[in-house]
Amino acid sequence: LPLPKITLLRDGKPLTPKDGIEQTFDAVNHRLIIQVKNARVDQSGTLTCKLENPIGSTETSFKLNVTAAPTISKGLTDQECVLGKELRLTVVSSGSPQPTVKWFKNNVELKNVGTKANDDTYELVIPN
Image 1 (tube, rainbow, N blue to C red):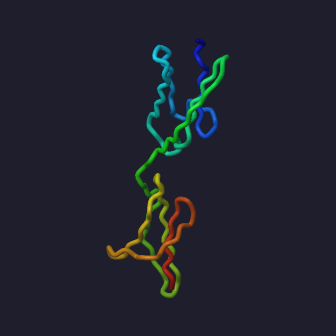
Image 2: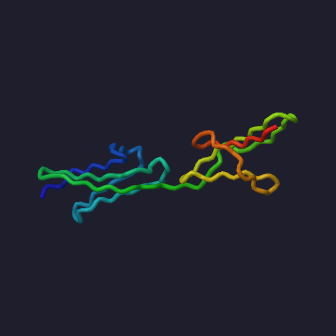
Image 3: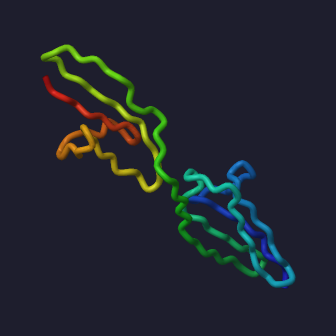
């Protein structure tokens, strides 16, 4: 039998060396070994292994989900507020799955406060 041409795709696009996902074909045992080294969240997606030879083709897919602990890339800083003016506190945080952000004052959780400005930015608005 002719050995198949193997194509590995992530979300329908061929993988490149910069994707950090290595593939090795073991011709003796007829198996493909996929290694993810130094996994990153951006490597998550649907991986598809496509096999082709002159007789035909087949493929199989699986979902790769790389998780990461929450990190804060921009934290809170000391603030001064003028009496009667609104105060906005902003935190930029990431993680996978997306972290839940809770706001506290004097170790007591503030309920029903805070807004999410975009994917990674969370904001607490303290009215006047």
